[in-house]
Image (tube, rainbow, N blue to C red; front, side, top):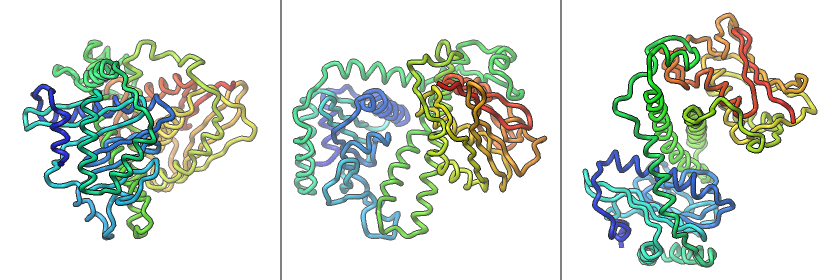
Length: 460
């Protein structure tokens, strides 16, 4: 049995595709995001398993840590390292929960992506199939098709790797009775359609901005004479681009981290892989913030902070200390230093801890992006009456050249949430978008030319 046979099994009864490769891939990425973000991550804690080819399709760390996996990967990947050991960990060995086994991908298997996820409450299979110009995304929730697909997989493993077949059978038995929700498909396809709609802006899209400095988005919109529809299309395009960047990077990071689990890596290889992992993580977070800013801009009442019941008591001091090592590594790649100064005994603030970590990392990246090598970024947290004052300053450059955000660059607004330096091509969140994001998280961002920036948080 080949994986091509498995795809044909899943495609039985599905209408012939009419899309091209680009269309099908966009559907695939949207389906992966919908499955993970809307259906799997909300079901915590998770227990289950997944099978994929030709690379791990899951990219959310929380899912990879909780679910047991098997991946059919091309043998050519083994040549990436001088070691004869397989690229992915655990080949031929039982896979503990939170890891995945590598299985050999045969030539007749093809390279179209395939993913099957089995949990007690949700079972689904996804794949791409069909010839060129007749490509299609296949998503199956029905127990009959999934049962037949699992039977084919067992047959494949029995002939290819009996130990892996026994591991899979044991993993399925540990899940106990599987409950299939008849409404899954009815909920999945509308959510997928919403994502695809956001990823497919109008072909009549017009540039939102033709020039100007980093001024408020509303003023730029009026100057350019753009309609709300043009702004919405601009934001939809931005969301699509950030999604297209983040998802492949997350897959690359998953592969890199699977390599880093090996104990036989030469030091220089480990160092390079850790650098790649860091760069991937930094860009995933960076584009995640851009996506969040665009999504927020499209929502009604985007200027309003989140309701108090959507926020939580947050130890901002602990957040800074936890992120200090990560920020030091990120700044060190650009020849910068970090100094953290946190007062003792500070009260907690009301915020969203998960998003706040990403926002602070993005703020430091934006503040330090244009600083010359050898500069020092100082992050301080001090009491300020009924608030906490988080301050970013820099040493080692002329403050008079600072634009107030630490970059020393003249930036132009590109749409309602981005600004860029036309000389260097550096792309960042606009000031207004950054202020809006912090406002939603309970903070207030202020800035003055030549004096760094400050974020105030009300204490609980």
